[in-house]
Amino acid sequence: MMRKPQPITRAYRMDLADRREPFGSLDDAWLAIGSLLEHAAATVAEDESVASALVREASQRAVAVVDPARLEQLRAGDWQNVGPSPLDAVILLSDQAHDSGAPNVCASILDSVVAAEPGLGTLTRGRVAARRARAAWRMGWLAEAHDRCTDLLAFGEREHEPELVGRAWVGFGALAQMRGNYPEMERCALELEKVAARIGHVRLLRATRASLMVVAGVRKDFGRALQLGWDVYRDCVGEPG
Image (cartoon, rainbow, N blue to C red; front, side, top):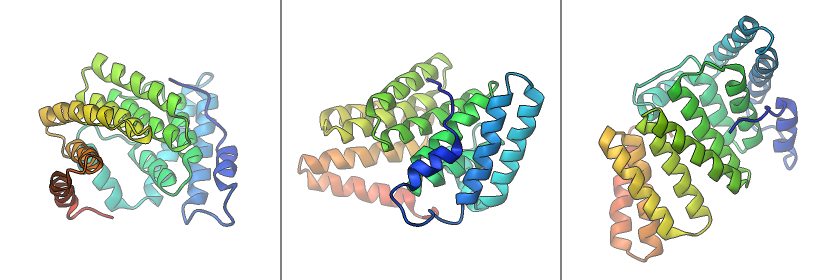
């Protein structure tokens, strides 16, 4: 699923609407980097070389403003040192916008990345798609998020990339939880567990345990919930907050 990127300034105004002050120290970077990507997306059909230069500049600026330790953690932890990309810093910047309460900014940046880079690698495209689905459900667009997860699942299966299949199941599980459908949430977690165990993906296995912990708690199986909670805590030890 691909749509024309929302202008970064409009996205920022939408996220800022109910606030009295900026989100933090990276607001200017969101706008500057988002603008570069937006212009790249608008230019790529006429001149791919100009678009590529704008994307490179955006990536370099992102590297300059994100925390190097967090960028390394993204690559070593979430990516498990598989398929790193020059765009990883931009993805991390979009994560920070999302986590700061600016999902429209996050979505604008991610949509611009996809529109500006038609030659994105499979893993990078799928990782962006997973985060774009997350932004959709953060904004309350659950049907859109479900469609994006469905597209991601099909893409991962077609490209034989189990990590992307797993990320789709993470999304389906989150949507099931938001709808209060805990049997479906459990089913999604077990599907995720099969994929994550097969490829030894620590972060995705952690997501499995976190989901099963919630399901156990809802069922009042507090002993299992506590054990799963400790497993998740143990898996997080030593990682940045």
